[in-house]
Image 1 (cartoon, helix red, strand yellow):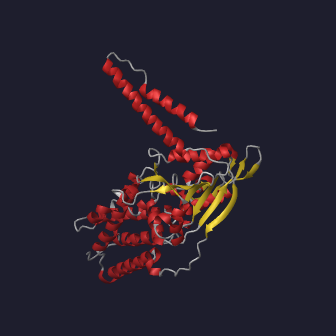
Image 2: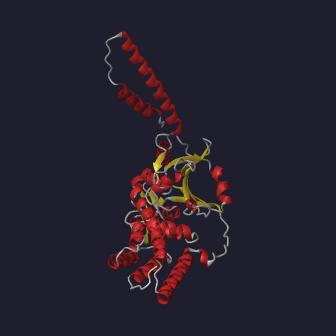
Length: 428
């Protein structure tokens, strides 16, 4: 059955609503209203042909599959892999992929928009062959899973994807955990299948949080891992069920492999009709990173140096070195203001209630400079560093950053707090 008739009816009804009843009292007014009707008819016809072209009836030979690209290490956006929906209709000569991962690297204010979560992402449509070479060159695997959909479900899914690809609909607000290149295909497939789709793991708890899943993909990128964990708040520690874990492309592919779908004849069949690896990325053995170049090494060395210098200066020279407090707590305060800004400007909540702010407290900048002034009394200085020490201990207990950072970094600051609460005969 052709989609042309219902689309025509829809557009004609829209045209009637746009024009509405027209009351004219002069010949010139009547002519103007007629021209307006003609113009709207032309616009409606243009919309009709455009929409009909994109929602053409698929042939019985049409097939829809899920394309999953493996993780890469060329940049942070490639660490988690990517998902696309592929339509192949050999009778109509169609072979195209729908991707929800497009964004403009050259967009004005790119970095602020990216950090604030306001960078527009959009749907891209392209042939698989157009991007396959890139994934092969970056050593990223390509898997295809053929979806066992009925003709009606295939038509509904492609019609919804084409509507999403319209200029007025193709942009969306990317959200790392909740609305991304994997969740959009997940939602599209689930919507097209309706109640006939059953995913056994959908409501089954995975035993992992959003943060846990994320960190499994960042083990080979320790500095990326540290930066992202520093920025994320308590929302990332929410435990996930199977549905939420499908914010990752690999999880989407793995869980759909276990799904079943009820066919029009009532028979229950696997959702994945067939699976093939289009490109198997060869395993590359990488040399381990020198320890002092990793976050663990850098901050462990910093902690040892600061602790050693602090004790040596206090025991031998009876000095505290206030300049070191200004440097360490000043940098901590600067980082704290940055993390607080991320909390404020993002609207997806993933950077809110960040326990790291308890030891990277924004108010260290400027309070650290006030507390270390020669004119500041011992009582006020002790009060500032005492409260800071309590906040550091609380932050260490609540933080969930993998590695040593949320241990050795707070300990470094804690050593300075403790030494500042000691009597000093020759302060510097």
